[in-house]
Amino acid sequence: MTSRTDPAAAAAAVYRAHAGDRDWLDAFSACLDRHRAGQALSRILAAWGLSQAEAARLFGVTRQALAKWLDRGPPAERAESIADLAAATDLLLHYLKRERIPAVVRRAAPALGGRSLLDLLGQGRSRAVLEACRDMFAFEHG
Image (cartoon, rainbow, N blue to C red; front, side):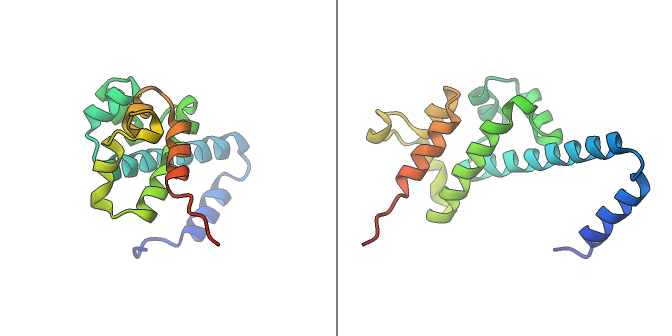
């Protein structure tokens, strides 16, 4: 953590400054959540080795729209998809060397019917991406 203001102190100061304005606090919280989602998306792109143009194509949006998502967070209707991909990315980062992830997400897999994780993402199937990653690392003990 950097030498910036203590997060708890900053939160308390913001809350004190706006304690009487619940709508403002709700809007602030929503903005903070969107920015965090934008950070999660940036982390996904970095881990998967995706350019903004490639990611935009996979999400079915323009590169400009994707850049906006990275800056301000994705729209609410994409939140679940981004959360699924973030969870899948966490699994990939936990079990694989970072430099292997771009090749793994691009490789066609028999278990995915000859498709890759990127193929599933391009079909809008982020939950299937997460399930495939869970299956990939479902080791049995015993």
